[in-house]
Length: 445
Image (cartoon, rainbow, N blue to C red; front, top):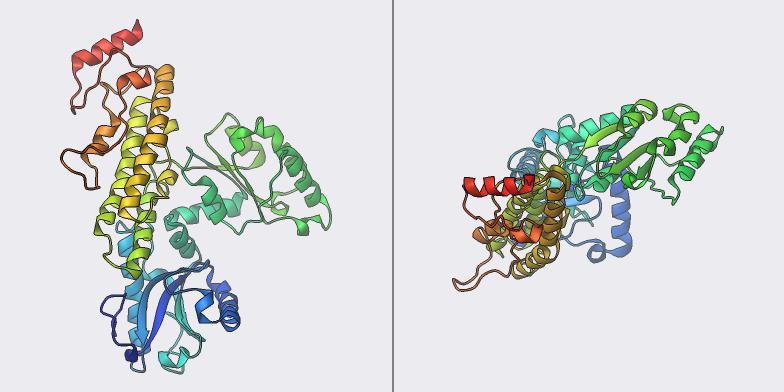
């Protein structure tokens, strides 16, 4: 028995087609999830619940196989492990997620459960695929399932959860677009509440917690987005000091665009712990590549090799993102670098992706770079040596086909655009020392 995708599919008489899915929840929650899935199948039928080519909310399809009367549990053990290993090799070739076949705690086929410490079921696999059974589910260790789903390395997920479990208060801090809000929501099942007046809302939470039976009505986790918009954070959270031990209060996860002077105060008096989500380090650094590879994998699962050129585009986008951030750091600071969020919406079609990128560059990225470098020059003076148009790299590495006489309609950025009049442009790798000296002398005078 061999693993099968959509290529070289045997005749349907070789067995029943089964999707191999990774369950995205905790292993102990799977029985309830499976019961609900069977009930939905019973009510709505096979065609209306989900198709083979679409992932449900709590599962992710990674392959298809066929199970027949000749399939043994040893065959299926091999298929499950190889399927999971092959998927990780495509999505995470650098093994940064820290997942492997040892992350599998069990797999389920119908009413049968198989795992390292679980013996062989009574019947052969074909005995458990009767009726509406159309999927084999892989369950991962708790932290592993969150790493698989969120594309955040397992070690980092474990550290975040440990901090949250020990201190119950966490603030995710980093540049815009680095996935702080997404990460906050993935760390726990969130009962999210909002309030125009943050201090009043937290005061209400503290009052409920101090009541004898009030704590039972509180959410388990509170997400507070964009705390940098609130002034005097120490005063905002002061109402929690009189609410009793933190264990009686909900866990609090906040997000901020940058650290402020309140950092020490919040950590000393309110037990907050800070986590930096920077573009140059995990989990942000490798997220875009993993995310785009996963999107391409989903397409290849149903239509392999349909658009081979698209793979080049998706591999190119992370290099563009890194190039832009290096440019912003060189000419301004790391505070103005951009997260990967803007690139996540790339269309999975070659022509559409070209139009999308042209619009993204001309109307979002180029204007932002100009403004960020202009402000950086005003704050720090001229930095980064001689000017190099950042669009030059993009033109030189452009992955979409275009004729020798046609130039990609990408907006260029020259020195005058960012307020560096008189310093000129230079596209060579080695800056002109005389030009650098002249520009620096102009800044001093």
